[in-house]
Image (tube, rainbow, N blue to C red):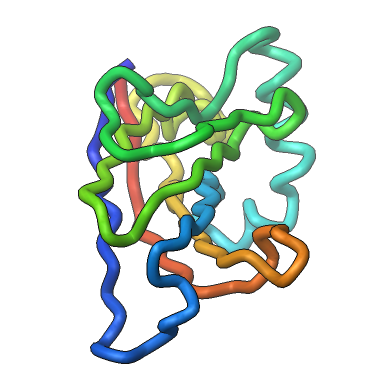
Length: 148
């Protein structure tokens, strides 16, 4: 599949969140449905996709293309989620691959259907005092459509 770059930038104002200086943060990427109607049935939709495409993932990181990502992980049970650590003071670019196309989730398949919009959602966390990345820093998302 095609790889798409997402540049990770430290957008803090001067003096903001000094506790993350010199520290790594964790970003979690998810591909979700943009339409509220499909959000309600997301679990069933993804299960159906998994059934039709055994062994495939919805979202992957193109590790050779990416820059500055540390410990990238893809949970085998969450096909639409990837995560990695990164240093906000260094250049970081993640290249993602989305392996499902927008028309795989349209109800009536007879060619020429519109295809459902997806949303890439990125949530970033800092470490708590126990070294777990649970403290929410920032969220961002954008709509995407994926075609062959």
